[in-house]
Amino acid sequence: QVQLVESGGGLVQAGGSLRLSCAASGRTGSNYAMGWFRQAPGKEREFVAAISFSGAYTYYADSVKGRFTISRDNDKSTVYLQMHNLKAEDTYVYYCAAKRSSGMYDRSGTYDYWGQGTQVTVSS
Image (cartoon, rainbow, N blue to C red; front, side, top):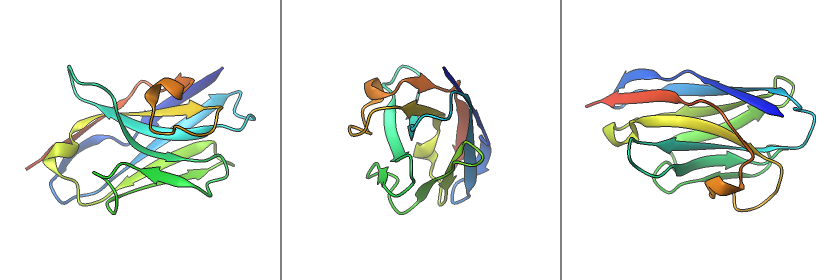
């Protein structure tokens, strides 16, 4: 089992920045790829970004390319999502997730573990 805890969400003005963190605990010795997803009430969860276990490969949704950066520190068992130039349409609950398998990083159904989510609200 892997437990994931997100932090760093909050209220920010449009154009501002936030950095989300996701701390993993439990069986973190396995090689997990990590992803960030976001979800609005009544909507499907959507892919934001993902990173391979080594950190060598990253993947982004088109809507966040150039504004968001995913990174990880395996020594700290933590993955980050640095968000710049935030827009009102980035207002969501953000979730981090871990997956053992490779590929299909944008598919939420391929992830094995999920955090509880952190709210990001961008005021316009």
